[in-house]
Length: 353
Image 1: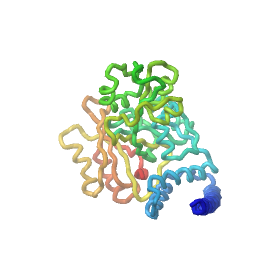
Image 2: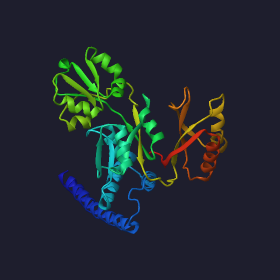
Image 3: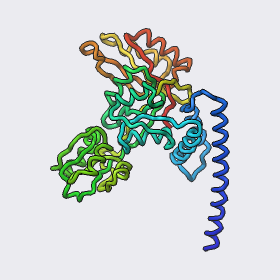
Image 4: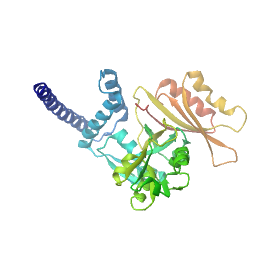
């Protein structure tokens, strides 16, 4: 028995040695590609999406595709960092779901710029303080993040990626459950755990704060309190997990967008986001969108927002399947633009893996 285990361990050691050699060879080739590009763009999300899709197609297990993507995101991140450490802005402080989305998209070998508000994330990217920003777009239970939509409409930045993140809320505290009088969290998180809170802490005072990580940071120094946040935030601020997965809907997911100054090329499986305004008359929006139906282009989201210009006038935020440089998409977008009172392409980007 012991001889069998020793033999298996020797084989694992040999594989580890081979892996180390291959990883270093990959890093060297990545460095050579970077030198060949010279002043070219370091981060190519369309290329990275193609890498992940190819690996998923060739993966025979036992590792899951999610695990393979996690491992290769870190490998790519480490290779990229040899050329340049990307700066990524997101909502802070450390331990937010936004930070988790950053790591899921870019890997851990990045410089994170923590911001207090979504506005500040946009400003950081616009000013060049950060090369990219990660902002929440919508939640599966709460809907669209209005401020993000407004800023996408106003800013001269482009959507260059999307990240889907399963949201798992935990109750964090170093107090005994019976001693908790106040519970801090972001307003959306409090809403997403409303039923559970009513059943388990009906008399606790619920206090909304700027972010879940802010809540965890506050609770670390405040008695008789708890925070609703991620377990990562709990670990970061030294809090115990009293209860996990307390969200009312287990499929709770937040979709994040990556913003930048640079457009992204086609990866083969892409989405395009646009915003437009139709004339204020019956059937106007159906008429404007008709070219998409005629061209067989699928809409995956249609969200309306008050325009802020006239009473009862709305902007429509739309996600489409395909890239803006595809010939069919290009023709349909041109026709829609002609029919629209206002039209803006927010960006094309790889569909989330």
